[in-house]
Image (tube, rainbow, N blue to C red; front, side, top):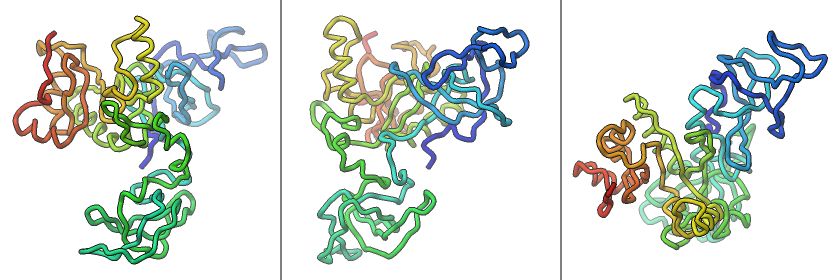
Length: 352
């Protein structure tokens, strides 16, 4: 799977003031001796001409999570440089910009795994999956070749030109002994810390870490969603587009540190209501604040009305009172609600 969805796509510069920036995101100006485009003078800020077709080759954010893209002419030639993603048609919404963490020997492709349990027993197959008395060495990279319930059959694997080369069969083991992708990151302090950048929490209980995907949200800010919610969200977004409804993310996963920062601002009277770190609905990896109008329930909010009618069919439900924008991926509850013709979990009420 390509976790950088923008690669090989053609985008159109929509803004007439698409300022070109250097690697430090500083504005670039024409200097003496440069070839000047018509109407430009020495000292003028450099811009990408409006309606130019470009390709994006890299993405990064500033300290405020604003997204910048490195663009080059779609038909070839010297790159222009960095410019804000909001200068592109559509604002670069819903484009994915890689995984977090980003250090991989081989990113998750669906079958490549890292053994993370030093007691990963090798077992015989169905029906008993009895232990054979040996173990898969911890930190080993393996390829899943077959699945049966909670167990997977794995083979040795090597990485050749960023692809999987399957080797000798190892046998069966519990799927929980393995993590997606091939990387030593699973043994790092950042990954194992209860307050690390991938740590998930629910109602004060630490759930463990999850892989995250960087995705551009509403307003060009970089958001994060869990890898296991990426496909469901994209299916929801694509279904909405088929009905001429545009979905985007206002807020999704928050790190422990980010939630602590928001809580401090709230307690100082400088920010919106925010739960204590570890207790926010945005820390368990299922919550999405989507681009509905805030608590407009009179039928005029096209996005909200579409979500009411369709989100449960795709595994999403309303999960917080008085927040029309807050939806969570809960496929089991969504299926039950859809069958009952509802979209809110019990207890969710709106008083606006």
